[in-house]
Amino acid sequence: MVSWIGQTFTSDVGWTHLERLVDLGNRMAGSEGEREGAELTRDALDEAGARNARLEPFEIQGWTRGASSIAADDLELDCIALPRSPSGTASAELVDLGYGLPEDFEAADVEGAVVMVRSDIPSYYDRYVHRREKYYHAVEAGAAAFVYRNHVEGCLPPTGSVGTPDDPIGEIPAVGVSSEVGARLARRFEGEPVEVSVEADVHDAESQNVHAELGPDTDERVLVTSHVDAHDIAEGAMDNGAGTAMVVELANALAAREDELDTRVEVVAYGAEEVGLVGSSYHAERTAHETIKAIVNNDGVVRARTLEFTTHGFDDLEAAVEEIADRHGHPVETIPRLGPHSDHWPFVAHGVPGYHVMSTADEVGRGWGHTFADTLDKIEKRDLREQAILLTDLVVHLASDDVEIDRRSPAEIAADLEAQDLAEGMQITGDWPYDDLE
Image (cartoon, helix red, strand yellow):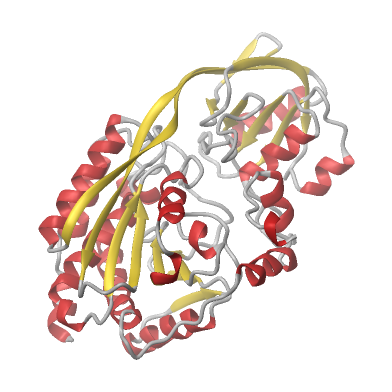
C-alpha cells in the first residue's frame, strides 16, 4: 500500500493535465476549446496506461454569447447572458423576488415583469432550489425576462444555462448580474421599468465524450466520471477542470494497481454537462445500465480539502466510502439524500448506484464557480493528491468481487424525490423521467 500511496502523493500527472485544460481558455460546450480539452484528456488517459482511449462525438444545440445589457433610467448596468437564453429584448417593471422560492412566485404577480432572484436559498429552507427551477417558475408565471443575482460578493455576475431537454433554448431572455448590481437594481428600480437585452448565436454544434478502460475485460464495470466542458467566462479550474484532472490521476494510479481490479473500470469524461447533462444523457441512453456496478462522478472535487459524497440512498455506497475513510484515517462527509444534478444523475435516476463526489463547502451554492473567478489559483495541488489517494482506494474497493452494491428501483428513486420535495422542481424544468410510473 505504501508504494502506490507515495507515488500518488508525489504524482504531477493530474495537476499537469489541469494546467493544460485551463490554458485552453474557452471550453464551452460545442466549442473548439471543448474538443481540444477532450483530445488532451484522451491522450492523457492513454499515457496514464488506460486502454482504448477514444472520443465519442454527438450533436448538441450550440449557443454562443453576444452582447447583453440591463438599462434603467439612462444607466447601463453590467450583466452577462445565461447560456441558452434566447436573443431578445424585454422592457418591463422590475420585480425583485428575493430568493425566488416556489412560494415567492405563488405570492407575487410577475406576469409581463422582469423578475430578479438571488442565486442562494435561505438557511431555513430544507432543499436547494436550482437556477433552472427559478427560471421556469418565472416562465410559468408569465415573466418577460429573468435576472439572476449572485449572492457572492465581488462584482461577479453568475452564469449557468437555461433550457430543457426538449427545448434547449429558453423561452425568455435571461442574464446574470453581480451581487452589487443586483443590490443597486433592487434599491433604485424595484417597481420601475428596466430593459433587458440579450444577443446570442444559436447554431448546430458537436460535443464529445472521452472513454477509456482499465482492468479486466468484464461485462460488469465501475464508471469513474467527470466533465470536460466549462463556462466560457473563466478557466473552469474548479468546475470542472479539477474533476477531469482527478480522473486522469485516478487512471494513472489504477494502472499501477490493475492486477487488483476484479471488475473493469471505465473512465468517462463527458462533454456538454453545463448545458443540461447532454453528454452523460447521451451515454445513459446507449449503454446497458445493468452492467454498471457503481459510478464515481467527480464534479467539484479539490475545491476544498475534505471530500463530500452524495450517496442517493444507496446504503452500500455509504458503507464503502466510510470503510475507505476509516482505513486511511481521513475525514469525509456523506449525504444520503438525492442530488439530481451532474453527470451521475442520468444513471442514478434509473436506479444505478452512484456517488456525486465534491468538496465540502460552508457556503450555499457554487462559491467562485460559474463566475469569472473560477481560476486555477483557487485550488491546491495537495488537495488533488490527497483526494486521489482516497478515491483510488475506493474504486479498487468497489471493483472487488467481494463487494456487493444493491440497486434501487426507479419507483424508489421517484418516491424519494417526492419525499425530499425535489419532484416539483424537476417537473417544471422538464427533467422528470417518471411519467411512465404514474
